[in-house]
Length: 141
Ligand code: ZNH
Image 1 (cartoon, rainbow, N blue to C red):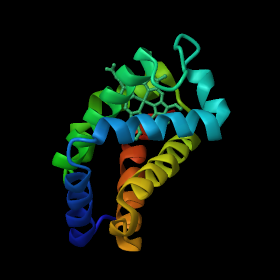
Image 2 (tube, rainbow, N blue to C red):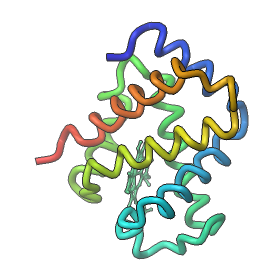
Image 3 (tube, rainbow, N blue to C red):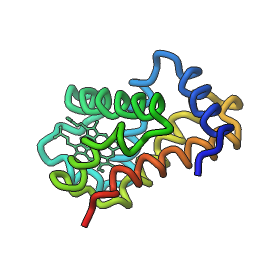
Image 4 (cartoon, rainbow, N blue to C red):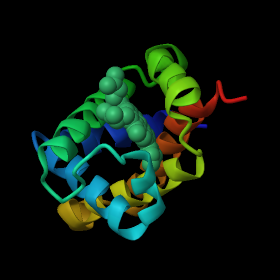
């Protein structure tokens, strides 16, 4: 469960990233494809080289969705309901992959923010990404 303190930290971290969300997102995705190559199998129709137009476009969408999630942090199920349908019924992404993306986002944030990315912030982002992942996976059968 996200505490009030977690929520504050997540908003602070997102604020500190200020404007570089897409870079962070691109780094997270590039790391995911590199460190967890099976994740690439979901994107057979993409040019997955770092910085390709498709990777950039996808990363803009993912980052925008995370932004929406942060704004609606008390109401994630509702805010992400369409994405949840998409991942459960169309994409059928194995939920283990959500953890991989979360890991990679942590590294991208930590390398950018350095000491500012405190253990408490790490823990809050981890919980937040788990909460997002459970919404994305909640309609799986
Ligand atoms: Zn996902 C898509 C979000 C994870 C896979 N995604 C997507 C989108 C979004 C997202 C926003 C777009 C939609 C539209 O277009 O409408 N994701 C997301 C998030 C997350 C995710 C937020 C977490 C956190 N995904 C994921 C993973 C994977 C995926 C992990 C694997 C690995 N997605 C995917 C795919 C797609 C998507 C495959 C489709 C793409 C195209 O375009 O085709």
